[in-house]
Length: 383
Image (cartoon, one colour):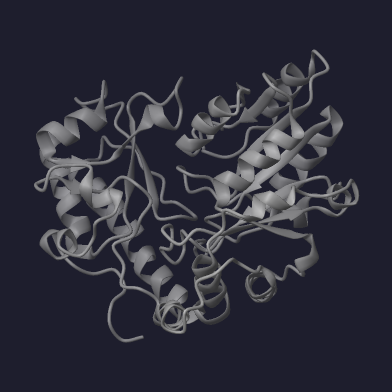
């Protein structure tokens, strides 16, 4: 591709987008919060969707092409030979995760999470009628095996069934968990009798110095589950579909999910997702190059103009976990930035109810011009 994928200014996107990112806040607010990219679409995906609608192919979904496309993508990108027979199509990643948690735990039972983690983890655990047990990540943002050991033991102390909901790669810290880390997690979970459900929606968005390891590759027990979708990497959140994948032993235990769980997926979504995996890699590679420049731009501007803001350049995702605790807006960065800077980030306490005060999440998947404007507004708020 020759033209940029991440492009446009505030006025450009305000007249082209009607999604939640662009409609929650007033027009003078620069939105850099929800995980949606300011991106031109992938041409093969756009063509596949357009042709499907043109021929009236808008019925109920079939998963075969989608599953085969993920298998091919996983083999090329990660060396993972995943069996399409181990996959079940669902409406989206969090629906798949929640239905697995419903299958693996009981009403009121424990679900372990590692804050800071995707804010919807907390919401879905509550909505399912389960209780959250926290195993916070380390100061470096990585999995803390000591905290996990404690939390797994606490969750299982009463003999209840328990599950661990993993973000792989981690949202919002941008950590790409290593194979050794994931293997250690799997062994620890097996020792405690905890089942692992891995949300791998950000899997294609890993930068060159790191690598994505599928949880099911590292899990020698075969008892885990993973949920995949290209919706984040190709900006397809509005085209609903995802694939639940069962580990070998988990699959042997019986039916993965009830057949009705496949009903929420969109046929057009499955077509779009299959096209992304099968034909969208050149677009993805260019996108990763543009995101790489943006994540480094965040580091450069903060180091030069707002060095009190803590920031670890993420190994994955297009999200920056910013630490404002040493700044004048530490009490509530989200509110200060919104009210005074007119830039909307995501509040840290949404990702870590106990330790997130003083943090905020920045989405840098936008044009260099909009990113610079967002950073200028942040710097001005701190002045």
